[in-house]
Length: 178
Image (cartoon, rainbow, N blue to C red):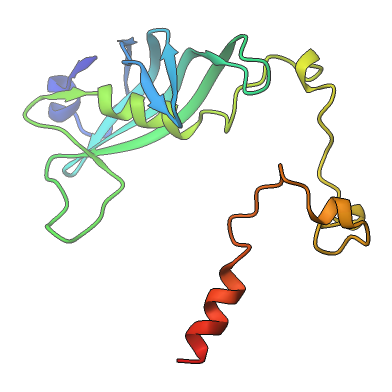
């Protein structure tokens, strides 16, 4: 979405409403493809000095798969925002959280994509009572017994147990003896 800044630049400090839609391309996140409905942006903007200040809300729906049962999941998103756009980018080596604009137009595509990605849930779950999650239990630190600490020899020797750092102690001890 492109916003015309002509009025805001000629009348600094005055609020101007804006609204429109931004198409967000599908995103590959941790091996999953997340799709989005068109993002609806609504709010106000004003200019001051060399900056344009936008505030408002972004609304969209993210479409992914349940992390437990892989069924389709729709996550509605309603994200309030306050963002700053500057005419000049940050100097080289200097970091800035502000977006940039050129001339008398402001493009909101990067801002919308950034807001959506920062507000996505860590994982999509179809429902709190997902049927596939019935066999899962919450981690209990107090009652966990590691295979190495168990007195049951069969449990210590479970062939299906993956221990990627099992030989690390031995390798480090050999390294110390060098």
